[in-house]
Image (tube, rainbow, N blue to C red; front, side, top):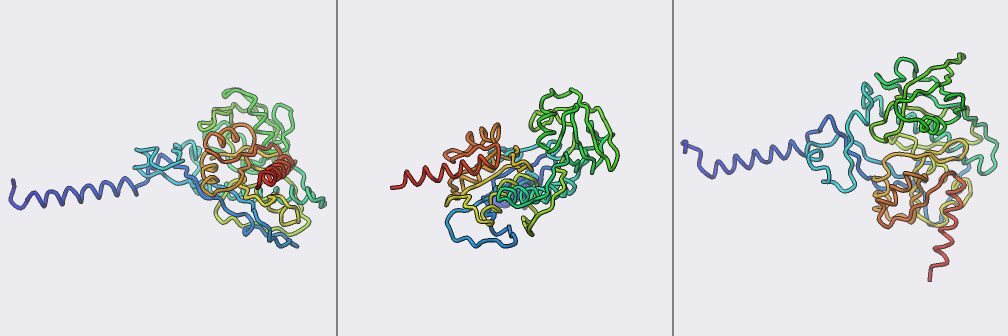
Length: 342
């Protein structure tokens, strides 16, 4: 044994090396992989202010659930099941090629802002206010470089038709494109300023959902004028998936008993006609709702509801297609719980 390298010193050196390696694995990010993690449910009430709001002192409340998204550590990438409810997503699936993290975040924040105004318009209409809110198509917010749309569409374009069928909402665009197989072409009607344009675009398979897409992120294009001032502050939380939660909370503040004394977690994009659109991250959201011990989790019908029931493990799931279904469903659940109470 070389002089000075006693067994004790070798053991200490080995331990220090192990600590360094573990530190790298735990703290060093894997640039090619993101991780989706459950987050707790957040009360919507303190985030929303509407002119003339009515004070609330009843039990229950409306909550939205989001997903924590960050780059995975090297350790998390090596051991995907290390965190309960986590999901690893390749960087190229989360951020289309050429779109930076910052651009994605800014796009999500714009989606949140538009979702808030649409939620307010739907809520005011529900309580018979006169609201000017006309859906005008799917507004292109981001175009992925290298995608089928990259050489033809531009941000601020408004998609108004697919193969001659009108597109008034982002949901219309998803439904019409969803009728095709990836690789099929679609004829788009587009409004660019005062010009009306037509493009034929080939669809491609989305890596995450398997659905046919053209490589754009879209928002609701609409002319909205609200009868009362509304402020909604969600900080740096982006995306449209809290739209239905905002609508329900605004109805509460406008005098409707929506939650019926229940703690209600909600996810779902709200459209101007009251339809509820599908969202992502349901596995993480239902786990967050379960951890927050809510009474019911309101989700869009279809794949979202099926996934919520698969991972909810005892969470009561209310699947809805529209705002009206959400209101009726919550009233029914509350009545059932009152009848079952001793």
